[in-house]
Image (cartoon, rainbow, N blue to C red):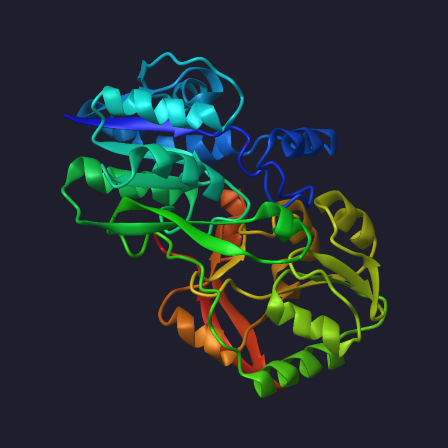
Length: 371
């Protein structure tokens, strides 16, 4: 019977919907709470655990007290041995928890968090045993996470019932202060051992792909020409969507979400609530580009475009744009949505038209069959 460790970073991802682009540091967490942010990682962790519930007799689960794991285990209907550690409400909880789980002799670790959490786990664990990350943060650049919470459970399910191969996964993170100022500064912080499940585990974010400048300009021109009067356009983050803003002679937010009406910015670097207020009673559309190398449309760095926003706008009003180079880099990988709302993720499955140049579209599927 295999021994599985489980821990949760309960504050991971809190800054997403309120536009803080992460929750590193106690001051940022407090600011997120004052802005109305709520914990989301616990429920994502429960989604992963529920996949494992039918296998309870085949493994022994070890976890940590309270919201660091025990509460989520109980909600998922599982049983676990709870290992006691002092709860500080800081990153030390993750590090101490990993040490305690190692001492208990776990053979694999399931954890919920973001890139900062992965850094904390890697600092203690290194490549000693396989890990599966439940994506619950804002950024998720690291290649140690499953493509969704449910798929994290499926990866571990395969580990429990078989002997899947392992490989090395990169732990990446960015400077959040630079990120909030609109500068992307990512670096490698370590390596961990991950299970080889290509359809269920995500790759590292590709930040190096060169874009086809002429195609990018043509795509941006086409998108702007197709805009309609008095419609609210939610322009997502990234360098590809920034080309659309430049076409309108607007200085957009590289790493945030902007709302544009009649080619004027009405809300810059908007929170979820500001977006909802800006589109209330108006026709609205979303302009978004997939993350290079991963294919995510929603749920990675753009949590401000929340399930509530997406439902109000509607799938038919989502415009996906990409350079040919970025789309080629995805190869046979599908587009992905990990909004935190499983029903909505299902609704977003199917094919999207992706604008890649002036008047040129490619069809690209969204969603895995397993998820």
